Image 1: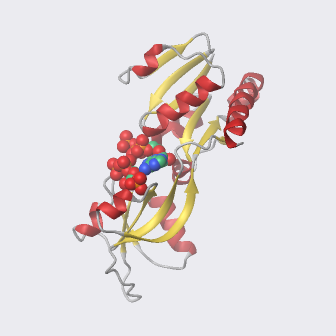
Image 2: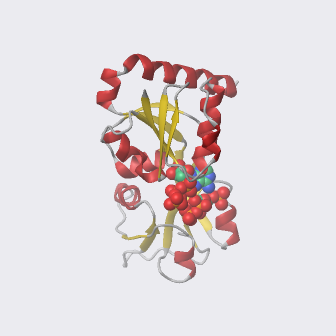
Length: 210
Ligand SMILES: Nc1ncnc2c1ncn2[C@@H]1O[C@H](COP(=O)(O)OP(=O)(O)OP(=O)(O)O)[C@@H](O)[C@H]1O
Ligand SMILES: O=P(O)(O)OC[C@H]1O[C@H](OP(=O)(O)OP(=O)(O)O)[C@H](O)[C@@H]1O
């Protein structure tokens, strides 16, 4: 049995679709979103359904052999796991945004609100800019509107959340897609089954790219 950590939320459905296309027979329990552990005996897999940001933690600790995680989560969490395949799902990017009236004032460290404090502080350090990071857990776009922060670092996909809140994108930081990640010990012990999962998923992804 392979234990697979899956992110609840928006990646979940796309990841399930990918696994089904790769020939894994997943039971109807996948449509019941209150279940946190689902056995898919035919596929030889047990799925655990975690918060997206926690998937690398489960995989690093080895309670899941493999998992699906956004690149954003991988950058933020820096867990000791292997990233083996770009699943090319849940495409988006990380960006800096602000109100259109925002002007840089080099004398004061601007406040930056984000759900990704590590990613954001690394980015601004690399830019040579000193900022104060304010960690929030969601609705990041609210921060500049009510004066909590000067800028935000957040995920952009269609851009409609920024537009709806009158914010403008200032810089793109990094493109994001979901990745297949693997626990290093599991990869040694279960290399044959894990390689098969990687190959089957890769074949579907390549087929969809054509
Ligand atoms: N607007 C988006 N479009 C495409 N992919 C996105 C978008 N927002 C987030 N993602 C990707 O999906 C992952 C999970 O996002 P989701 O919004 O489902 O969870 P979350 O906001 O981290 O969790 P929760 O809201 O349960 O705390 C992110 O880590 C990112 O990789
Ligand atoms: O460019 P868009 O297509 O509008 O997508 C971007 C939005 O999607 C995500 O938020 P989510 O819906 O996960 O809500 P959250 O703010 O609670 O994280 C992200 O944090 C942005 O707010």
